[in-house]
Each structure stands twice: as C-alpha cells, then as structure tokens.
Image (cartoon, rainbow, N blue to C red):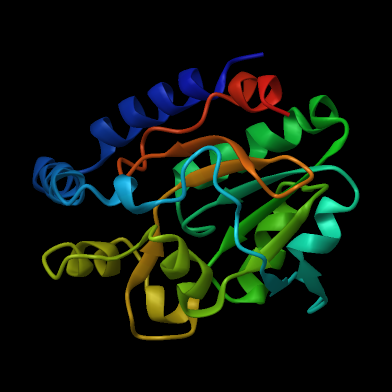
Length: 210
C-alpha cells in the first residue's frame, strides 16, 4: 500500500503537468503568504484541553465532544472541503487505517454544508462522522481559520471551486488542515497543523499517540 505522502507526491506531479505555471505560482504565493503569518502558532498546543463543541453530522444529528470522550480517545481531522484533492487523499487514507484507531473515535470536520460532507462520506465509504463547522466557528475559536487572499479567489473560481456554494456563505474562509488527538480528559496529546495544505499528517504518528 502506498503511503499518504507518496500519494500526495504523485498528485503534485500530476497537477504540475496539468495546471498552467501562473496558477501553480499563485498557489505557491498564497501558501507562502499564509506561512508568513504564523497561523500555526495560534492553535491549541499539546497538553492543553480541547474546548467542548457540538456540531451536526451528515444526518443532521448533533455530535458533542464530551460524549465522544466518554467512549475513549478522540481524533479530530479538520479539512477544507470535498473540492480539495489533498483532503480527499487524507480522508481516504484515514479510512484505510480506521481499524488501527482501535479504542479511539475519529471525526472529520469542515466548514462545508452537510450536502457536500454527505457526498464526500458516500464517495469514500467513510466509516466515521463528517461534521459541519458552520461559518468556521470552531476553527476560528481554535485560531486555525483564515481568509483566502483576494488574488487567489479568481483562480479558485476558474477551477470551478465556488466556496460560497460549498460553505453556504460569502466569507471565503477555510480551516488550516489540522489533526488533534485527545485523551479521555480532552487533553491534546498530538497535533498536526500546517498552512501548506500539500503537507498532510503521518497516520502512523496518529496511531502512536492514541
């Protein structure tokens, strides 16, 4: 089985051969700008207690963190949306390793409306809940929300990514791809946070911290 990192490397090579250089350059500029803002430093750290939340799943059922913690450790994976090929690879990789998360509950969280989360869940036959963080409220609380730059928005539109349709608002805000592992007290035991959305978590690292 190829690793997630290997799949991402293949995706990068594929995109580099398909997308015009000016689009690739704009993506790189966008990532560099976000990196310069030091957004990762605002996120909760290992040893801190993760705030309780209640978000809806694809069946419009409320899912509350404190109830998940009663069952054991919890893994929270924040992703941008089903339009993001890197997010798709990560969620599929998490599903492929789901049996290795024994004793922990995995949930994925994105700002997109339930319809798109349900589509994603069905497309990859995900065996875990996908929750809607409406208007990126939880991500903002955590300090992992950001607004896409004005110069990159037309490129997203050109590629058929209309965030207002996916997210149900006109804010053009996304979460930084992030993973948090929590013990049963809600204390963070592991984090992966990277404003470069091309970089994704090493799933073996998650497993080692459950």
